[in-house]
Image (cartoon, rainbow, N blue to C red):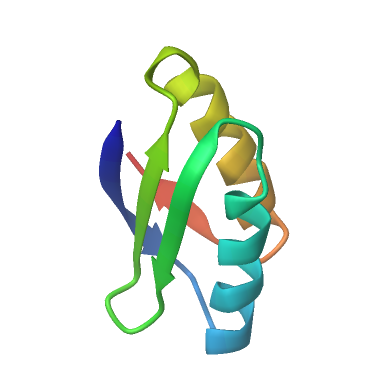
Length: 70
């Protein structure tokens, strides 16, 4: 399943790149793209575990004081 989410409080491009790498490394994630200029996350992940993966992605985003808006 591929979904796009708005990001809040993302402050820098380096943080966006680090967050993208962290989310992409999560188990069940096919791909993750963080667009700093558009303040969006495009997450492609396993349908059966999508909610669980999204929670894990939020934990990664928390390290950068960023919120994934559902």
